[in-house]
Length: 186
Image (spheres, one colour):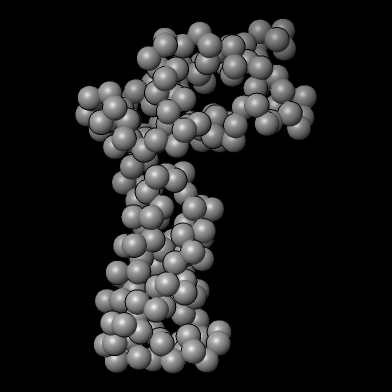
């Protein structure tokens, strides 16, 4: 950390809002990138970053080792991101993480192992067999990174309806893929 940033931190700890604004300008792209690299909710990255800077400002006096400012700030951002994802996670109950990971990873790009190729092929077929409305929700959520809130606004459905629909989509895909892979192994 350079001495000018250290000086800004010390001034901010004394209540200097201008110094803190300069710290935000210096660190905003780093914090945004940190959040974006870990978030499934890309449209919410700016909001989470802003919340992290606001929270950091209210707690800057608690920072004892100013050399660790960047790590401390990213830690705040990470905690806020985790809270955000827990709050908007469609996997509240009975989520199949393996299927969720397969969908999120991008079906088109996964061709590493023969078993993965079989799983992906089965998943593509199963996805094509879904109801058109379910296909649209799947596409918007997993491939266009729409949040549950955004899907709720787009469809006019409640938050809980969207999360249940995502659960049912994953469950239907899991059953279909399992059935197809089982039929291939017989």
